[in-house]
Image (cartoon, rainbow, N blue to C red; front, side, top):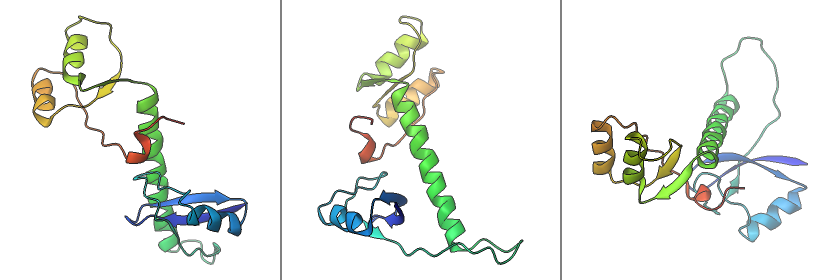
Length: 144
């Protein structure tokens, strides 16, 4: 199994796991690898080096910084997937449905959807908690 450090044209960095170097090349050539954040299929392999522990208390190197960024992206994607799997998509009816829940007209439940910035501000002024969560294109389809 090959674990490769990859990035898209927007410089989103992520890991890819492949059976072999040839499998990576084949998938790349046919556009079969997509960035988990933006869905871009222009993927390139980043150089990787073996990890060497030469000092106990040395400053983090570029691999550690990259690893931190990849970890944060991974955590963000997990959080977004959790929100999407544990809420109901009410689409453009978000503001209306949030009010119905807030005022006790329907049973309380987690919802998500689309609202204009004006609608979101009006909901906040009414005391209804609203959080904007931009979704990467790759997550707008079915969750797998």
